[in-house]
Image (cartoon, rainbow, N blue to C red; front, side, top):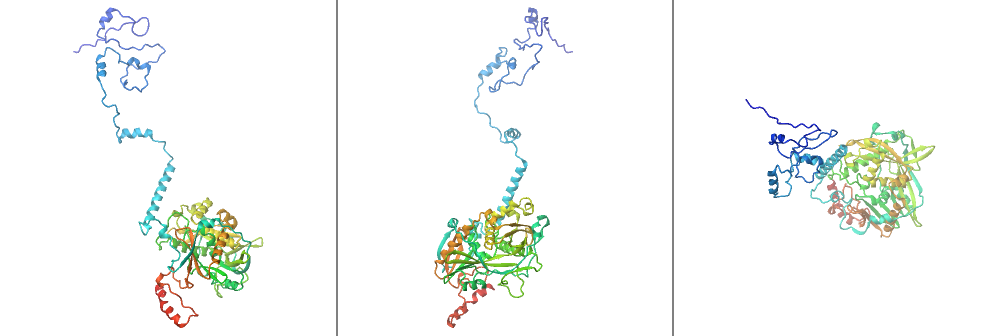
Length: 566
């Protein structure tokens, strides 16, 4: 049987708490087996009891603040433990650098979490992730649609010249757009020489159209739209014979010149100097007959011409949308406002679109007058006063390109939608505004037309129609009337100094400048195909006054463009 455990003698202190101050010799002898200098922390009855023992402390960390109450557990100066003191004195640290921390592992993760900044809002992070995905998607589409992967710039492929510059053309001058910004010229109010055509009344119910009650865009295949150039206009020919002016143009050509500094795509205008008169013309099938889309946008469009979202396809689509919209928003009940003469381009019994041609004259100086054919598309009667309207349509083809979904933003953030269009289509909107100012329209109606589906470029819906006063809208888009006329006046003065002949103004496809070329008298007269013929296929057309010897070779080579068209 195991012997019992002997506790030993415990001295009694009759004077207070703890062991007595002095013990008897017998007690000391009896307890001689106890270690000397055992620490004891004196305390009173009001003190809280602390630790009995602390086995976790270390005195090797000098940066740790020491608690005075823990000094009782400090045995570094205790002579009862001489071995530990010898070990400490003989110990030397070979490398004072801290051991390297592992870069991975649970301990590293927990330590790093304390150093991470405060977590950001989840919605902000989600939007950033979506923006990164969208940017990556656009880059991927851009790279897929590029015809040449090694192409340094998109502009070099997309922005081609609107007309092929032939080697026999002689460049006379080139004018940078920077000089246009400084020009200014004030013209007096114009006078109406003649009004032709007929106008139908505007249907005000379209002012209440919203994305929730959208209207399907109809197609008007039976109505004829005319894009007649200046010298083919019988009225302008008559006015020229009557010496009503010295410069003749149309509102489309004038607005192109007035807004030239905003243009990015290439365009061309034919200038004919006949005697003391100047005619500004456009070629058949010219780019001026179409409407540019996303011309001033930074977002690249697909470069394949047969793509429904290419620049050319969108221009054709926008032109048809604009024509159909201008006829759909009218009250088609047969009630028309007629003017001095009927439509000069329509045959008898032919159904024509609602349009009125205002032949107006401006005084450029004491000896120079300008006559232009201006168009308005509709009329509205308010308080027994008739007001002329211009009707144009902006078209949305894919919200991913513009970044603004019209169906969601038109009702609540219409200003943001218009601001986006002003950024992406600055030149087109400025030209529409200039045409409304030239025709002295009282109101310009802008329609917002979108595709039924982004991949369906045949079916469209009208989401909204908004009206603006041309002068107020011009001030809003920073379109200066004096600067517009200053550009026209400078180009007219430059062309009037040229000799008699035919010239062409070409906007450079890659630089903000316009060039003037002297071209042969028969240039562009055989240009019936969509794109200009190659140089070796351009021939001189037969003339009616030529004799047989000269007409024979012309007829021999005239078959080439016919074969090219076939």
